[in-house]
Length: 222
Image (cartoon, rainbow, N blue to C red; front, side, top):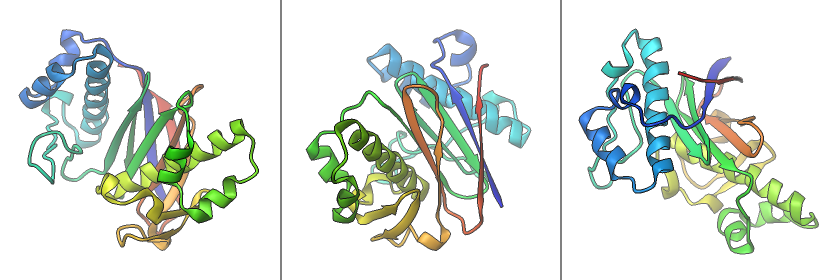
């Protein structure tokens, strides 16, 4: 059994006590966001991760330093990494999440107010999955699509490749990975779980492991 713990948080205010936990590179990224809500989401994701991971490592949050170097361009806007840990950060609307596991992990959360038009559905789902949506009413079709979407996003994040894995190359059978066109995702060593981020949101977590997966969720406040 492998444990995965997920924390959900609301956007923090840009107060000095939180901003002080950002390193100089993170401070610059924080200032670069034009919208206040984007600055708050970034700040919250970093503060949440530094606090939780610091507890695991016996470090003060300010002493937790991430490497967010982009694999493609070398700029510091990639997925944050910390040696000896496996974690994933995701946000949507007023919900910010952190997943921590003992194996590569990917987390995705989406607002349920987002629309799913035909072009988005055909972009994300392959023919096998589209057949599963056939005959559903509009509301049920949208709900079913975003279950696919959050699960696929979580899977791609767990690999570290993100959208470099085409969404349609992943085939889901309910809450299980049935097939993948990318060697980074093997049904035998991939586990998925749907989450409960709260009213108005959908979420999923993926862990690259052959073990059974046990997930716990918590709401975090500083």
